[in-house]
Length: 463
Image 1 (cartoon, rainbow, N blue to C red):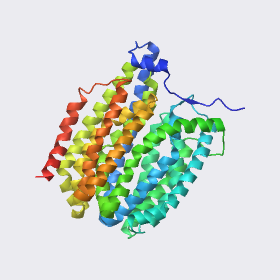
Image 2: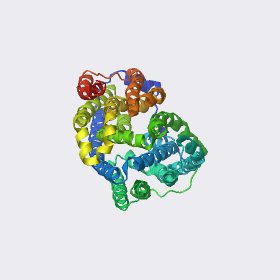
Image 3: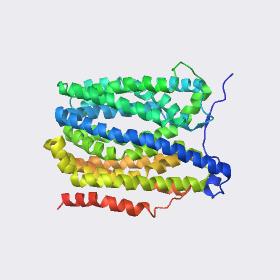
């Protein structure tokens, strides 16, 4: 007999009405809200610590790579890892998000069905990635990326399938273990890449480091989540997962398609060095922006428990957004002023061109910090197609602007494309206003203050 499978917590019309109207908070609701607050604060501490330490490791890794392998080899690595990371995300097909949101909590058989379905998707994705090699060779006009690309393609199954045990840990709000696994994996990648780079392995140093990271992370996640993957299948449950995953996957993967703009378009028009400079600027800005990742990962798990209480739902969003802006803004702004000196003295003068892109990327990251948690809120209330529309518009604007401006302005053309594409975020604001209109009274002034240094630096480029 088939088990009573869990179902995602889509909002019914009654639930949407409940969220649309303020409700009085009963003792049970108050206790539930307080519990969510405590758990998410604990999760935020662990994930915040993980991503804060991750920034330090990333900076160390980038310092080593930039000194020892140089922009050209680093650009080849970024091209290969950008493509294969996207493949791994596509192969998950939103199944990991489904497992977090569905009620009641999935049992071991349901996780094994998820493993089985995702394994089939991974196999198809890897096969497609291998078939694309002739087209990629023609696009880039060379073959030097093929070896690193194939090596990282072989790690895609480990990267994708690790999503299943990680979701079980996140479902339990066990972010301490999640943080430990991810941080330890990143440390493995850094140490191995450091040793190989010092021994003259060039581009293969970060490639091997990335591969060893995935070799460590997948079994570690399975062990800590108490999951031993076994074949299992049920047509009805597989259809349920894939139906839900279609909307979420299209939205999230449309957003992640933007990560291919650098390896595909910048690589095409500016070569590996251009890819390296843009990747350097993005890595720095997004390293400072680790709070966005923490908030996004906590958002769905926490907001799903508050979705029927408009006051708590709205207050949680506003507070989280404000905290992100006032924490992230000073870091991004400070690097606008001190970045050229830091880059020249710690990474080498040959990396200075990356600083012509950084102010544009910093603007995009700060504006996105006001949007990403709102997108998580829309996923919670079943409005993933609204997110899809916003992300799709963002991708189109970024792609077209890059194609138009990069050949004319060089790598700063990519920077302008990042800024212009932020206009698509208006669709997320409009969609959220129908569910829980948040106030920007505190958020916008703080955002404007922290945007000013980057905007002044951009204006200074054209004096």
